[in-house]
Image (cartoon, rainbow, N blue to C red):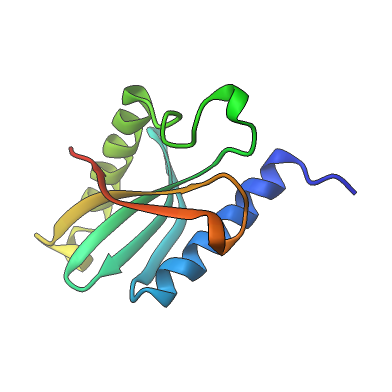
Length: 121
């Protein structure tokens, strides 16, 4: 049975969540949606709130996983993060925030690249 893109993406997100949890981060939310877009993972890293984009690119013909996080995609993530912070201000207050990316060319732990502070708001 062939795995479709949606299933592959969900598997990559689950793998990323496990990988990051094993590296000390704690899950706050997964697949947070609002009118601006979606954030794959929201986690805490000590006192920082981390918004994480997970990208799986198995075919290099369409560009790398990192290249797929365009300026337009970054802006959607930033707006979604701002919305999340407004909706959850009591829980997170004035905590430090950052945007990370998990990049994969195969859905396994040997092929994970974790970019901390992948972009700024």
